[in-house]
Image (cartoon, rainbow, N blue to C red; front, top):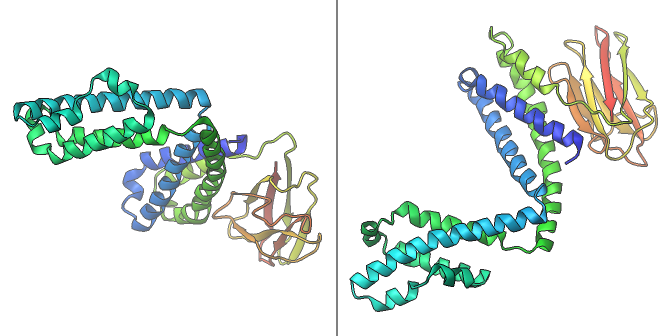
Length: 318
């Protein structure tokens, strides 16, 4: 995770905190609540992926050992209960199937341990009613199943773990973009519902949304005012453009809008992908890649429509 992605993640945390504080205000708005659900699903996935990407091999080994120990502890308790139940009912065959000490469980290799615990879970499930008298409740059997699933997930070797981190890192970047897109394309525009609510929710929300700021060592900012009643294509002569640059775009004049894209020349007109920016969703966070930057389209352009008022704007690339 680079600095900008961490800023995106932190911004998501701030927005969610603001949503929690103002839950009573927005939760009664069904359309807005649906957007919150989509945002939080992506935010949760970001956290899951972050844990994977930041886990080193030492941490993986420790987590696997902890998971193995937890599985053995839960399994041994159920083993003892089933063994006692089988012995008291004269079911020697069942008693022999589960008769294991802690040390014998610990001595099993990973595959054999998982196989034994999976079979143990089946036996416990089949005898759940009887085991209630031996202090084994359905929740204990469910917990064993969860422990089996957890340990099975940790059984991967370090090579596989490194591949998982690489895959998670790629998914993390994409999920962060999707999370920010939900905010920019859906939640930001829907905030008009609360603009005149008489509370601080509207202002607090957009203050929270403003904390992302492309700020690399080579970050550059350009701004200006487009005259009223003038349709024009303006090239932004950034010298730091490239395939993976972060971009922040602001439309600072109420009631105005413009289009941003990468073109084949400083004067070329809009071509997909085009990002439409207006004062309602401003600021917008994107990347040069998402704006279509390539060796064939190396120019960052703005297309301004002819509006009754002048348009104040700002673009930062870093």
